[in-house]
Image (tube, rainbow, N blue to C red; front, side):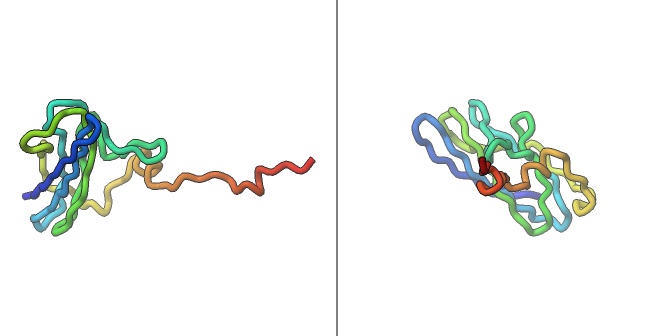
Length: 123
């Protein structure tokens, strides 16, 4: 079973949603969560990369036994009861052997730019 706790904050016509997902089982669980509010889902973006765990408005992550994971998004919808809904929970295969997709690998990299000394041209 997974436990989900969520909170919201409304600012300037935008609702910010934070949730913590805790795996209380003894096996890794693959959890899918979606926005339960009546509005679009705006997943977080770091630099130019959208969080790869968000696909088509659904957040999917494998959570190890006894661990928790945070998830957040924003939406134009006004908050009401529960802002998130668990879509599915299933026992994950050995999560240590999962292969990461290209988006996840790129999202984990820091942004890089060459040092200014390299860009300087001596004329």
